[in-house]
Image (cartoon, rainbow, N blue to C red):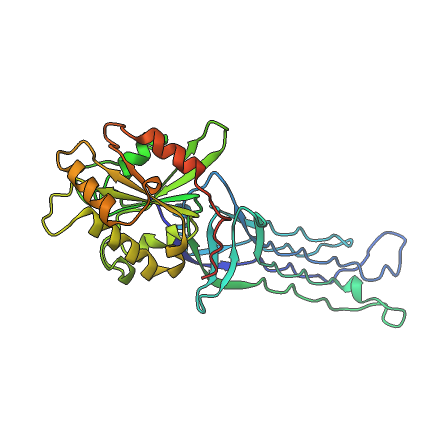
Length: 340
């Protein structure tokens, strides 16, 4: 199951207590204080991992804590430090304060892969630490301090070079399965894809272009209609877009040009910067009898250059080589940094 948002309470380990102890050895009349210090509490550390693709492992983990430090021992023995709690997350995960919504950290490929979210408590001091020339037999110690804790939200926003967007049943999943090795769910009904799919194209020069298939967008998706905001955020980090347009739509009140306009408007309404991304238009289902007429009308009225238009049949595999070549050659800017 694809999970891209979880909330949890995280608690770092408490430091171990120091102890009061005395040195007691044969033939040693006045041994003095000999209590050891407590160990440090474990940290809560988040680590990005390329082999993890969702936050599913934490869907039912609402409370997690690191190990506490152990108390000190006699004979000046230091207590064992608590083990760190390492939470592995996918790249693209944002860490937010649950109460304020403030973004505390963003795991991107060009940043650190590890980050300490909650520091463990310090260990307490044994009575040996308080020995002075004028206080040679201190009869007290200090407790360990509590580890830091907080309530946080982890939110995943996929990091991809190219995002596939289209209305439901436009053929995005079929296209992705043909040009990559993704095993996307395909069906002849709307909203077949209920979770984002992520795969890549291997180019001739061994470069890889990472492609995200975003579940179907409908009119007013930016107002949380349909799948709405649940997956629109996954397109924020893409550097370029491919609009997949259905040339075989059988609905009387819809045309391919209107579909394209709906998609553009929804993306810009959600995030105005989407209107500035470079894009290509894959005009799908050229194997349909009405496709040629719809293609001609779209080409004449859209105002787009021929270099942006790619008539294809994802089902039959027609026109895909030209599209893949264009994806590899499209000028991709630096990855978009998301701060919200």
